[in-house]
Amino acid sequence: MSGTDEGGMDVIATAGHVDHGKSTLVRALTGMEPDRWEEERRRGLTIDLGFAWTTLPSGRRLAVVDVPGHERFVGNMLAGVGSVPAALVVVAADDGWSAQTAEHVAVLDALGVRHALLAVTKADLADARPVLDDARERLAATSMGAVPGVAVSAATGAGVPEVAAALEAMLAGLPAPDRSAPVRLWIDRAFPIKGAGTVVTGTLAAGTVAPGDRLQLGDREVGVRGVQSLGRPVERARATARVALNLRGIAVEEIARGDALLTPGAFRVTVDVDVTLDVAPDRLPAEAVVHVGSAAVGARLRPLEGTAVRLRLAGPLPLRVGDRLLVRDPGARRVLGADVRDVDPPELRRRGAARQRAAELAAQPTGAAGAAVELARRRVVRAADFAAMGWPVPDGATAVGPWLMAPGLADQLAARLPAVVARYRELRPLEPGPPVDVARRALELPDAELLRAVVRPPLALREGRVSAATAGLPPQVQQAVDAVRARLAADAFAAPEAPDLAAAGLGPRELAAAVRDGQLVKIADGVFLAPGVADVARQRLTGLPAPFTLSQARSAWGTTRRVAVPLMEWLDARGVTERLPDNTRRLR
Ligand SMILES: Nc1nc2c(ncn2[C@@H]2O[C@H](COP(=O)(O)OP(=O)(O)OP(=O)(O)O)[C@@H](O)[C@H]2O)c(=O)[nH]1
Ligand SMILES: [Mg+2]
Image (cartoon, rainbow, N blue to C red; front, side):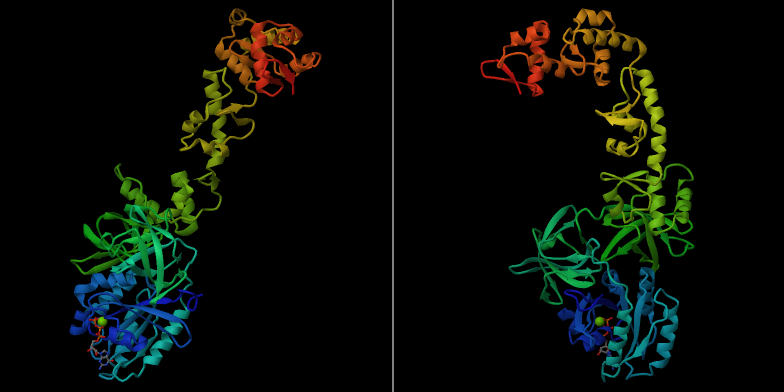
């Protein structure tokens, strides 16, 4: 739904040759003066972007970005049309299709603008019919296709209501903007307001902005103090809309046309971009200017092959896969439309890498299917990063914490993991399996958290390791442990002395392995008992009067102080016994 929503409206831009009557028509439609500067009014020439708005007869609100036609100001024109979904193409009946008509229409075509209305102005001065026919025929060959045309005279007013009606019809066919999308507001003006600080304006093509929002500008965050739309404060502005934001914490000198205000974290900036052009040109300039939104940034072009080109931008831009760029060769006055295909492209080092990359891009579908291919190429990405690049989550991707794994990758790695564990245990038979970081590196994963999706029975994630379920101990160690356990079965508190353990081949590593495997319990350094000793110990203590002394407990257990002292503390720590202020204990 566009139109009457709070802050909601349609936004279009004018296009056409100098003096063909764009501003005059905007004035006739809106009753507002689009030429903001005194110099513009004096010279009767639009220099910079103008803004006007009106409520159409149906109640639909329309904002118009009025662009200059003069060839010297085509940069300003580009900043004005970069975020609008539709155009009002103006051609004068007494002059016909002209140089900047062609240039502006080429720009709209390169931007992929699909919706337009043709107005043939100055119909009071010449027969509009031939110009309507000629212009419609030329427009039919562009992204705008079959465009309705209206003859109009701002001098007599004839045709103005028809232009308004035709605009309504065109606007009804515009796709609904995505109002839940993150904000990327390309700034077209920034100015100070006394007492209010810095104000920026732009065309909000997607998303929603409200006072109190925080937005990213370069590497800082700014607060939105107030939002205005069409000259009035609003509680929120929803796309599509012309908006003016009063910003907190930034001086006007720190902002320029072409900067973008972004939903924090939702975009990443880049200087390297792989694009595909609409057509493979005969020759490409080595350098060009890239236009997107209201931004214009120099770029070096590296043709890969066919329509695929790598751009190296002179400054970073917040670009996403699926963005439409305009690549302009100012010398040749030529514009090319380009689709952003990758904002984090792989380096091209090897011979033939450029050709291979071009082949990859040619084979890669766009949209969700392309996202699956992309994720397969990257294996594992941070989900937020992937989204910020402009990719949707492909079907079959595995989400693990903040990560996204390519479809099928988890299964593939799960199949490899048993061999990794087996190899590790061959080298370190006393350990149940590799520490998670060893497994992570073996599987070339960026984060051990991803092992959750890869460790499957009989393997298990236990105590920071990928453990084999049937870990067990090497036979000799097992034998020695069995002997100790037999002895403890006969006398639960007869912990073997260190020399006995050593003589049986049970050093610290072997004992640690037996503890990890659940075969022994470590009470203190050098004191090992059987699992279940807590129950036996408690059982024996029930026969004592409460409270009892350490010495009484020692006799009840029939052991030495070497075992009784740490065992008592171990039981205290586990809440089996309670230590009283006078050092006696009672059972809990
Ligand atoms: N007779 C007649 N004159 C018109 C009409 N529309 C515009 N004009 C005149 O044409 C001249 C140029 O009009 P603008 O509206 O400034 O033209 P523009 O396309 O905005 O020009 P730039 O912004 O400089 O590209 C002005 O003197 C207008 O009064 C019309 O329908 N009939
Ligand atoms: Mg004008």
